Length: 383
Image (cartoon, rainbow, N blue to C red):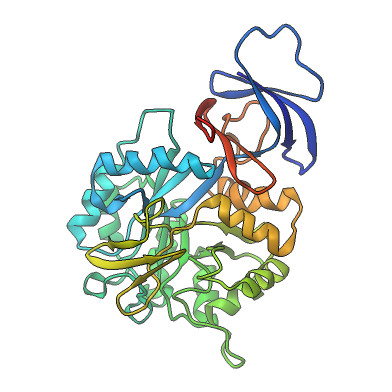
């Protein structure tokens, strides 16, 4: 397909007016001038902005489905929904549950989804059960346990090929053995649901920790005598930070501060969304817990935040309205940083000839008008 009359955000941050030729699922050509002698399908992009498809590395569910359901149909329902918000690839994210439930979810979600007409599943983000029960948030405390290499091997095998990120509490990792083991095997280790001190985060970083999970939430906060995990994220330029930009998990003022101090190079926008995303207000479940959805908030009966119903395009819109970043920064936060972290920047994360044609076309209100997954037009707002 030839996508014409669009504003194209290039890898270097430059925005040009031109067209993109898609062939065999890849970006075959990017041109400022009309491409001659093309006889195939054409799409008028209506001067929309073309960004690389969003990559959500922390998402639990949508449209009534949760990856912990342990059913292929649930995973497919989420994957088919995500292009509506511009997300073209994602990590299946688990949560603290009974070991057999986690294992079932892993087994179902390591088979892959062959259909190209949906967002691509890139692997698994294991969130819990290796966390601190004092910072459990919406994670059920009954199944929390200390980090374990043997458990990880039991669930993922010796090669760990499907495992991409592990969220754990570093203070629960004896001698940082699991952190070191995962890092040595190319797995991103992210501190989350943790009461760690700055010293413990620093020591964990020396053993392979490189990221903070849903920054600011379920972690030790900033204090003038112990700056904790939040302070570690502000201070250390080698820590990447997951950001839930819904105005609930992080206030608008905090989002401004994060962008000013941490910056786009270390920010990774995520949704942490649950099964209620895309659904009406009401009561839903997260694990075995009842969650009430009112507007853009998801809370347990005790008032604790329980994931979100955030869409990736809404996250970009909020960031854009708050700090007016250059397009290059929007790409970093929503796609490029995640692709680089996952080691797939050679094929995703930017609009460049030879890469997967994962492209989202947005209007000035950050509404998704068209989404391409590997060259397939999988979502059109007017369809």
